[in-house]
Length: 543
Image (tube, rainbow, N blue to C red; front, side, top):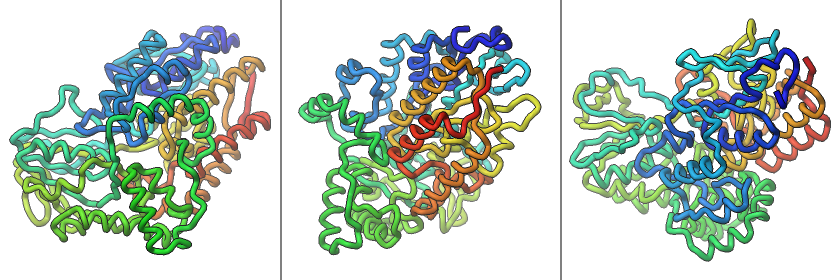
């Protein structure tokens, strides 16, 4: 084989097997072809797109601006593609992904409708054997997990769901044909990003919408609008510089000057004016960049949190409902900060009710609706916006192991253990893209995807040039990185929230803060340093 031609590996089916056909899997195909490697990617769905293939719920939209949330690897693609709005909708983003797949002929290396159940590394053959749900097996010396961070929906586990006579849906498994809620009594469980995006659309259609809220979340106005042609033209003229500059920012998004002032150094009037301007501008990065310590200092954060709570009180007419919608158990930004379009306004509609299931928990789903400790609500349909087993769920659904050794489920029993979010000790030649303990979900995801894929490609090129056929993260390096990720998180306010970053939405999941929040700039500098030091923390071998 062209890339990894040791005698033991010469009978492999491919050089590289990729698990996942989303943005990460597709770019991996493009990048690794340039090394002359043979590749096969497997995708469980009947189309590519990952998150943007599965999440088809009404109102689904990216919370990173369109001009940033796109591939940077081909300038003609950047210049030619036209984004119609400030924030891309799911259909438009999926159209873009399919356009990229067609333009670069990526589909010839993708096998659809194929779910991977096992990935076992054979020490004797030095090969990964990948098994599909239909029993097909393929082998390759290199395995890349492009399984995504939000790709394992948390399926509802409410008692009595099977008895419900109406229809129910999950935002992460929405029917392709869509759902017509006209004339129906609809209940929504979940007030995270998916629920908040979806509910204004349901409220405009349904006879009645009942929102079952356990935890209020902070949401800011997106201020979405058709993309200004002049802004688009200027952005495209500056694309190269902006893409480079993005790597010198915390979140991987250029154009936001880093704040230099503490919120506590400003007067109350100054803070009010700054927060108001950010509120009118729309977007989450801008708001969190109002002051330098909003994610570091609770007192500073309190000023930003209370500003948003006051906006909720101004918007929602009923004072009791407004207070229920005001988050009171986490600092703003420590959970995923939501962007919405007219979310709080729906609670002024006569056909929308809010049910507080923190004080009156859901007991069960009945034949006719949802029963709490206080009441039973008659419903024709239920939409579950209950989120995902984030960051580790998709990996742990696959039996990943070295033959005769522990599998990933056991290795991650107390939470994920990775080196740079790229590799796992004791798993040779297996890479992850935006794995846990990398910036991933706390960054512009496509930027982080491209960074990881490029890093992996350069590592594989290094192996080929050095006649190495095996690479693995060292356990001591992994342990130091895991400790560093935890220390950085603990220096911030993030651990104060019971978020999916902590695995708090999955019963029984270890409470470990999973992303690296030191920022894209710090992370990429460390990755570069490691390479410059001869791939410090990695062990190479020739079989």
